[in-house]
Structures are given as C-alpha cells and as structure tokens.
Image 1 (tube, rainbow, N blue to C red):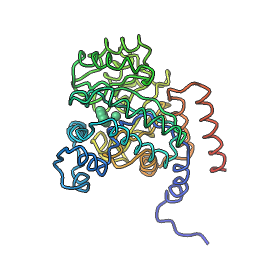
Image 2 (tube, rainbow, N blue to C red; image 1 turned 90 degrees about the vertical axis):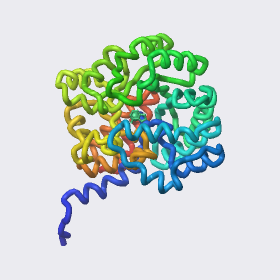
Image 3 (tube, helix red, strand yellow; image 1 turned 45 degrees about the horizontal axis):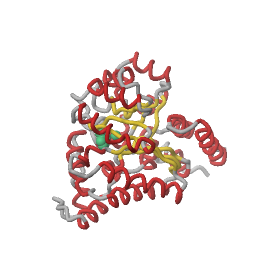
Image 4 (cartoon, rainbow, N blue to C red; image 1 turned 90 degrees about the horizontal axis):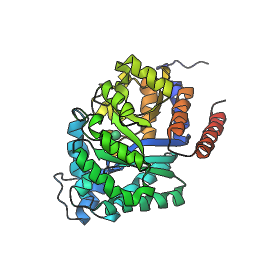
Length: 351
Ligand code: HPA
Ligand code: ZN
C-alpha cells in the first residue's frame, strides 16, 4: 500500500544521505585556522595562558552570529591568538584531518594565513612546520593526500605580501599555490599583481578569493591579472554574462562554500543559493566548507544542507565531486584514480 507523502522530496533526501556520506570527497577551500573548534580553542588558551573573552566553549558558539565577512573575520582573527607554538598548529591540523577522514575526504587543499601569526610574533617556521608535520602524518595514518596554499591577507599591503613570499621560499616544496583572502571589498586583486607574478616565477600556482562579497570585476582581475587556476567563492559571477561565458568555456573551477555564504549573508537563505543554477549553466562548481568550526559544518554537512535546500540530484552530487577531483592540484594519474574510485562507488550505490 502506498504511504502518503508529507514531503515530495523526502525520499530523495533519505536516499541521498548515505550517498553523500560515503562518496570519496575532495576539499579545495578550507582555511585551517577556520577549523579551530571552540573546545580546542579553550584547551590551547589554557595551555598557552592566553585570556579569552568568553566563559566557555558554548559561550563562544553563541557569539557566532555574523552580519557579513567583516564581523566574522574580527572574531576569527582574535581566536587565532591562541595558536602560538608548533604543537598548536600540529594539533589544529590533526583535528581537522580526523574529521575529514570521518567524512571520507581523500584529498584536501588547505589554506593557511601566515601573516595572521607572523604579525603577532609567531615565526613563519613555527606555523608551517606544525601544519606540515600533521599533513605528513595524516597521509600515513589516513591515506589523505594534501596540498598547502599560502594566502596573503588582502587588507595588508602588497609589500607585506612580498615579504611573506620571501619568508615562504625556504619552504617552496611544501607549498603548492598562493592565494588571497580576508576583507574583500575595497581590496581588489589588482593590488597584488606584482606579488602574484613573482610567486608564479617561483613556480607557485595561484588562486584568489573573488566574488564572495566583492563584484564580478574582481573575478575578472583574478583571472587576467593574477592568472589564477581557480576562483574561491566566485558566486557573484552570475552578475556578468560575459564572465560566466569565460568561466564556462575555460572550465575555471569555483570553490563554493554554501553554509559560509548563508552565515555571512551572501545569500539570505540556503534555498536562495545559486549553486544549482551555476551547475546548470555549466560552471565547474565544487562544494567546500571554508571555515567549518564557524559556519556550522564540514564538507558533508555542506553537501547535505545544499542537497536538501536545492534538491540536488544524485548525478549533480557526482558532478560536484568530479569537478573537485578535476580541479585539484594533483597529477593527472592521481586524478584519474580518484575519478575511478568515485565511479565505482556511484555504480554500487545508484543502480
Ligand atoms: N573569506 C575571506 N577570507 C577568509 C575567509 C573567508 O571566508 N575565511 C578566512 N579568511
Ligand atoms: Zn575562504
């Protein structure tokens, strides 16, 4: 006998959950400092004798209501103050990898913001050594492969970015790409043309946050002046048809972060998110978590929430995963192995 259906999408959603959970996933937009959970923040504050202005981890969570990128970044930079020693960066990265492994992440490309730490007197070596040690161990323990992307803080000067690039050169082999993050509006990519050119001369790939809060014009600048391989966020591209055409024809990947976009008011509700429309227009869109400790979830929660709000189909979920594999900074053979792995899983789960 047929059961009455309360919600026409309920069956879809129930079928989609195990699919999303077990699908091998690739994450391309994750700020490691944004994975600092309040409990770990408190633990580090205590062991490093850093005063926090919150009474408990729960009180920290309650403070996580943001109006926009700026109001988030104020809290995010302040929280980074508990990160002092190599061990802190190691513990932070290890905690992220444990969660990533639990969500079947097989490859991850992490952003780190050295200037957030060097500005406070923490040496560049301390930051990168802790992160790197955890990544090497994470590959051994969990089989998760990774790449590191060093972001320049765009609210600081181009000279400061050049200085940071110089500090990174002894660690050239550990860093795959440079990126651009922090307060977007009023800090266009064009200001960083020279430092990105130098980075490319040293063999770094490039990416940039563009079109999160800032205009489509910043995406053009990231493409034409910074010669990026991917755009981080990029949701504002839909304001400009010629830009969409360019991104589609070149298949420039966009690392979209659905829960982040709602938490920071880029979209009022997840149901209004343009992720599905972007996919349907042929853009190479991927799903990512951005700052999971602040925005309500890691990569699986982003997939599940987006699927439910936008009624993404199983083929669309696979397309998002295939896009992320294609967009990864991995050799072609490794990408093909991941594509094969995802395809096997697809055949097993969806008849
Ligand atoms: N946008 C820009 N800069 C950032 C973010 C973000 O979501 N997270 C950390 N730095
Ligand atoms: Zn980001």
